[in-house]
Image (cartoon, rainbow, N blue to C red; front, side, top):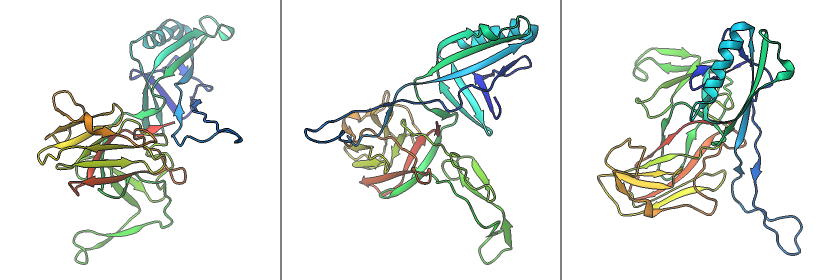
Length: 321
């Protein structure tokens, strides 16, 4: 398929004698689960204020194997990959690899287009239980305390063709021209640095365009209460408990668990650590989901802490439609 390369369990589906063709799913449709509330003597229904809930999606791939080798080798390879337990389907779009755990729903030859030993088209349909395509890499994004912090920046276009910076100390070194800007993908000096040409800007969808539903939040040592909310949906996560000056508090929004440990990057728990899930709660709009803002595609979180003014850390993977 033009502009998109698919792989299954890391093995490319495109080969010398096999191609994923036009007509495969690029933008898989979704259906929405809605709670309808009716009121007597009122037209229509009453919005319940909850963020949308999406049903399981499916993705369809149309694959053509051609030639003698394609029929005997690539068709068998495709069948073997599709039958693997817990297959992971990935696609590479504009150089970015996105993946999803899938389940095979059907695999069949399109007999109407088959020309034996010349062309064998197949259609593979996969269920996507997790709904969204996800980044293959997880990043630890800093969040300032007691403010609305940017998890991922908004799409942006720069009007200037360059900007200036000091080569060394300000006002005591050469002034340089730069036609790019840089940002850390995670923690400063502890994550990859991304170079963004000013002429390109931050493209819409560069940092995702789907909700993040499985954030793990690291809260600073000594906190007694934490509230993290999404300004778009009103969903959030709340924790209250006993202060511990020696341990970080982790809030797993995908699994609704919480734990404490002195390890500053312990993103899985609570087994083996101090389980503080009993202090976990969420607002009326539900457990935290970080949605991109409809206007500029930025991801933001509002944080409120007591017991500490240090920042938080969000363990997250980008998500796409």
